[in-house]
Amino acid sequence: MPVAAAGHCEFFRLHSLLLIDVRALQMSATRLLFLLALILLIHSESTSALNVLAIFPFAGKSHFIGGEHLLKSMARRGHVVDVVSHFPQKDAIPNYRDISIRGSSPIFANNVTYEHFADFNSLNMRNFAEMAGTTVCELLGLPVLQELMDTPKGTYDVVIVEFFASPCYIGFGPKLKAPVVGFGTCKLQDWFFSPFANPLNPSYMPSYFSTFAQRMTFWERLQNTFLVNNARVQFDYYLKGQITQVEKYFGRRISGLDELYNDVSLVLVNEHFSTNDIKPSTPDIIDVGGLHTYDNTQQLTPEIQDWLDRSTEGCVYFTFGSTVNFESFPKELLKVFYQSFKSISPVRVLMRGDPKAHLKELPENVKMLPWIPQVAALKHKNVRAFITHGGLLGTQEAIAHRVPIIGIPLFGDQHTNMRSYENRGIAVVLNLNTLNKNSLTAAINSVLKDPTYRENIAKISDLFWDRPMSPLDKAIYWVEYAARHGPVLKSPATELSWWQVHLLDVYGFVLGCALTIIYTIIKLIALLSRALRSRNVSKAKKNK
Image 1 (cartoon, rainbow, N blue to C red):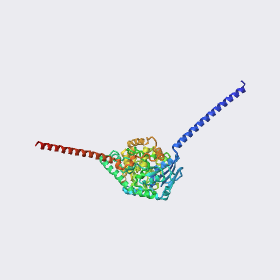
Image 2 (cartoon, rainbow, N blue to C red):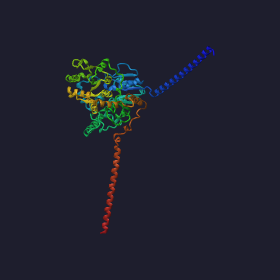
Image 3 (tube, rainbow, N blue to C red):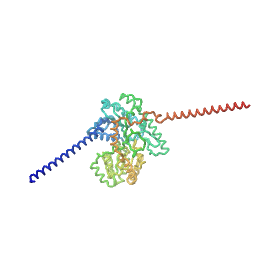
Image 4 (cartoon, one colour):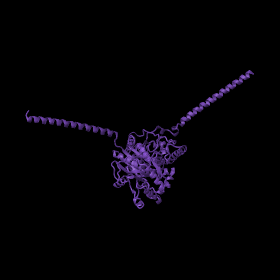
């Protein structure tokens, strides 16, 4: 064959091979695009974007942090979220719209002073229900919330309502014809068990106001039984005042708060058995404890990063949270902290506070800053201990990242939280009223030098993380589930009265039947005995 002809043949052969390769690539690309389109179609069918209304009416920053993290994550996943709160975002977030009620109530953020602690600790049930319930429900009269009530029905696919002491806000669900999801910022309180037919057994389930472990002595069970029933009875009584507020602001007549609770599809609760209690639960109570700890967006500033990196002998992280004003503490008490921190050098201390107010007294081994990214700080390998007031969110973050705790509870559930952690061997608890340099230094050294604290918190941290899905993903799934299906998880026991739930009518009937049978038998025996006596008398007379 001539060279030219051979070259042409080779050219045509290569050209045909290239055509085949291009066609194969086109077919592969077409198949790939088809597969991607199919996946997107299936995904869009199963997780279509929701219009979500979230209502967080309590003016405590710590009550909003977990919900805020959930709502921002939902917005990032394509859901459209409208948020009623006292804490609007500084910068706009796609799919996230603030309905601000800031200024309508005093904000609990860095303004709770030392003088307030005694007032908070002395709050009785009535005052607590008034402060966290009745007063909060009065915000329903705000024009922005009245306008929200007039939103066309069907605008929202689901309504998320903070569950604390103001169930009146559940009324938004029926008003807007949308399923309701409750969001609990702490573990389920005693007064929320009965409305969802959730069993609360005082023999091994400590009250929300109790500091007992689950394994109680007789006297502890006796006290716990009183605390549980006292809390339930009093809160049921004082929260009933919200019935008139529901009628006033929603124009809905209800016979009791149970009618509101029946409108709740499920409740997301900030608890997990690893840090709280092991207990039975109905399917509509979903534990999502620590969902805010899954925050990978926080970054240390160069200043904090350098301080922690150079803390080769270890660092103690210290904060009293977003609510407490540390600068309001008496000077003598502040000196206790300064002197104790100085005595543990070369161990360093990273603490949150106003540097201008403490600059002269601060030891060289202490770094104070007005704001610290807490999750990022607790993740650092050189942070060996966490001094805290015992707030649930901060202690969950410490447990998640294996940092043992020195707790100085100030008020509220902080006492309960810290006693629970002490019982688990992951914390040392101190009393603020008897705090001194020696007791604080001894507590810090115990946590730093006794390996059992790190071993115990490592075990609990493993339990905390070992879940089939993250609590954040779990919370989002169940919100979407409620939007799709409504209140299908409610226990049938919610339709029964308390005596039916406890089978008192059944036991009464059985007891009545048993007494009737016993009475009948006794009567029959008496009649038979009388008949026998009569017969014997007749025989005796006949014999005579």
